[in-house]
Amino acid sequence: MDNAQLLNAFSEAITELEPYYRKAVEDGTDEQTIAKEEVALNGTSPFEDRNIILYGPPGTGKTYNTVKYAVAIIENSSLKQIDQEVKDFGYNQVFDRYKGYKDKGQIAFTTFHQSYGYEEFIEGIKPVIDEEHTGEVKYSLESGVFKGFCDAASKLKVVTNNDNSDMISGNPTIWKISLEGAGDNHTKRECFRDNCIRIGWDHLPEQIEYETVCDSSTVRDMLLDFQDNMSIGDVVLSLYNKSTIDAIGIVTGEYIFDNSLGDYKRKRNVRWLATNIRENIYALNGNTNLTTRTLYKLNRINSSDLIEIIEKYQDNYTNTISVEREVKNYVFIIDEINRGNISKIFGELITLIEKSKRLGQEEELTAILPYSKKKFGVPDNVYILGTMNTADRSIALLDTALRRRFKFIEMMPQSGVLDSINVSDIKVSKLLDIINKRIEVLYDREHMIGHAYFMDLRDNPSIECLANIFKNSIIPLLQEYFYEDYNKIQLVLGDMNKIDELKFIKNTKVDSKLFGNISEIDADKDVYQINEEALLNSEAYVQVYEY
Image (tube, rainbow, N blue to C red; front, side):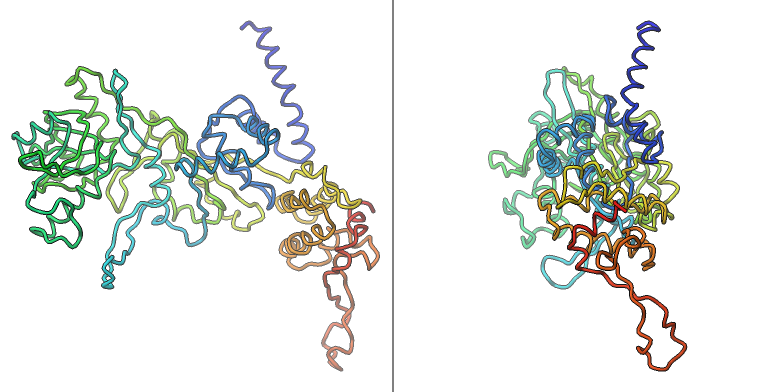
């Protein structure tokens, strides 16, 4: 492309963006924010930022828009395309896709609050009442919603050059298994040959229950793990000696009791990725020796740790083996993100959400979690989408670490979506515009009123519906904004220019006889009350913007 073509392309881009800049100036919106939003999200560019916060006054559609953003991210589409779909086919079609992705686990939703903590978000130890109802309390280590979501998004696919592949689960358990003990033996060779794992205790029932009498409680727990707790997609490491493994495999089958076998009849199918190897995992296992116990979890090792080992031994096979991370996008939505204590919730992991520190990036970072002692990192395909209400006073306390790691996209009231709504002779869009201009002067632009409060009028454009919106939403919001300063509320609602019958907020003098002869009471003080008759009078609304 020569210089003339470049200049022409640049001119076309400027022309396309001009309406957004003009709107930014008219609305008072920061031009740089508008430009970034339109180019990165509404144009042809994909979503480059992994952490996004939609912020603005109440009722501007922040939560509503998270649906469109989430679908656009997952489908590698632009927000402009999704908006066009909403315009052509309706919001419900996009929302149905959103629910479908949510059901598949690609979208998760949570709301921050003051009591929300690290244990709910990352991981923690939680009490569990035993199933026998004896009243005994046990404690288990459980992943929080964000860690569990990241684990699900970290699926690894093992691929061979003949297109055969198996998926390591998103949150795989890594199991150490002893196949007839350590070293080389007959059962282990058969397992490697037949793509399976087998354990014994053949004299016990085929199906083990918690109540089954076993050789010991340890044996019972191991058999239950092999039978019920091991899952397809988990990874098994075969013991060679106390520091070394001789095979790595992916579990591909459910538990069976195979009577055709002479011994070690408890069986599961696996796909061996590497066999007859000698790999020292002492350091990987937290400088801890392996034991001869038949089956147990290796909590200090995760699937990412095994990638290099798997690829290291790919020459053992006629087919080339590679390990790939899943490429599907995942979106974690945090509503009211500013209401949570970010330091308390994210803890030491706040750095891991940075784009350059994500798993798969050149500067990827992991941290050792304090409870499980397992490595944890945030996958590159996980997007964090937050919402923030600027009218909430807690925004002033917003954590600096959050400000630096998120892209902020402002969402202001859009009165234009109300242009087609007329209640009697009331122009609802003009009504909202003038109210917001007055709020901006008397308070600030962060406390404007969003268009979402009036959306019910699309299906029910009646004076009764409008009166209900003002009585139960708009006036209470103004009371909160102005701390019961009814003079300012009257100014916002235009009551100073109306006759008493049309005022939404009526003021009357205090009855001088109300307190008898007590002179300390200010009898000149006004008292205020909502005039419900004016709320049902269309002229009272018209005079808000025609004065």
